[in-house]
Image (tube, rainbow, N blue to C red; front, side):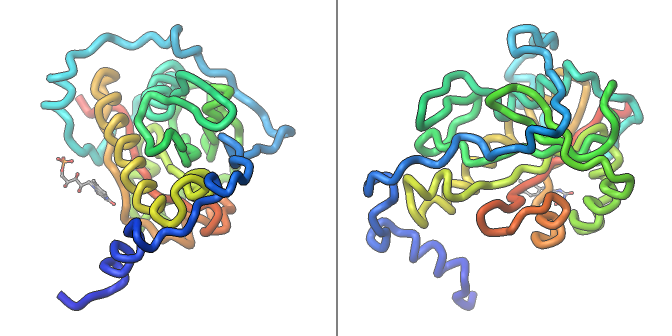
Amino acid sequence: MKKGIGQEFMEKTKYKYLEESDQRKEVKNPPLQTAFDKKKKLIDLPAPDKIDVPSWDLRKAIEDRVSVRKYSTEALTLNELAWLLWATQGIKEISEIYTKRIVPSAGARHAFETYLLINNVEGLKPGIYRYLALEHKLVEIDLSEDIGDRVIEGAYGQKMVKAGAVTFIWVAIPYRIAWRYGQRSYRYLHLDIGHVAQNLYLAVENINSGCCAIAAFYDEQMNDVLSLDGEEQFVIYMASMGKKIE
Ligand SMILES: Cc1cc2nc3c(=O)[nH]c(=O)nc-3n(C[C@H](O)[C@H](O)[C@H](O)COP(=O)(O)O)c2cc1C
C-alpha cells in the first residue's frame, strides 16, 4: 500500500515529535463544557438516580449487541433518553480541571459535546438539541423543519438518521484534550469516542431499542448543520437509535 496521510499521522504523533503541552507550560485549562446560549430553552431530565430502566444482564447485553438500522415508530420517553445520555456521557465527579464520567477518557479530558437530532421523543419537538452534561439538561439548538433532512444529507444520505427516535451526533472539542496531550490527543479523541458509542450500543439493549454507529458522513455538511467551524469543534461520530420492530 502506498504511504499516505494515515501513516504520516501515526508517525508524527509519536512521543518523540511532541512539543511541550499547554498544561506543562501552566496555561490555564479550557472549560469543561462548551458555552451555550443562555437565552435558549432548557429542558430538565430525570436525575440519574431517578432514571427508571430495567436492570439487565451484562453478558446478555454484550451477546445481543448488533447494529440496528430499521426502527419502529414508537416514541422514546424522556426517561429513556436520560438513560442513554447518562450511560454515554453522565458525570460522576467534577473538579476544576476535569470531570469523571461513566465512560473512560484519556486524562479524564472528555473532549466531547453530545448533540441530538430528536425525531420522536415524548414531550420534545423534533429538532437539534444539545446535552449539557454538567447541568444534566437539554438545550434547544435548532428546531427548523428541514433539519432532519439536512442531517440525512450530511450523513451520506443514510435515511436511518431520521427514521429512529434519536440520532446522536458527537462533537469533538480538540483543545480540551490537546491542552494536555498536544497533537497526540487527536489519536485519543478517536479512541475515547469509541467508548462512548459502545456504551450506547449496550445501553439501548435494556430499553427494547437498537442503534447503529455512523462514521460515513460529509464533515463539512455535518459541521454546517451544527454551525461548527470544523477545527475548534467538529463532528467526530454519530449513531442513530430507535425502538426495535417487534
Ligand atoms: C467506526 C464505525 C463506523 C460505522 N459507520 C457506519 C455507517 O456509517 N453506516 C452504517 O450503516 N453502519 C456503520 N457502522 C456499523 C458497522 O457496519 C457494523 O458494526 C458492522 O457491519 C458489524 O455489524 P454489527 O455491529 O451488527 O456486529 C459503523 C461501525 C463502526 C464501528
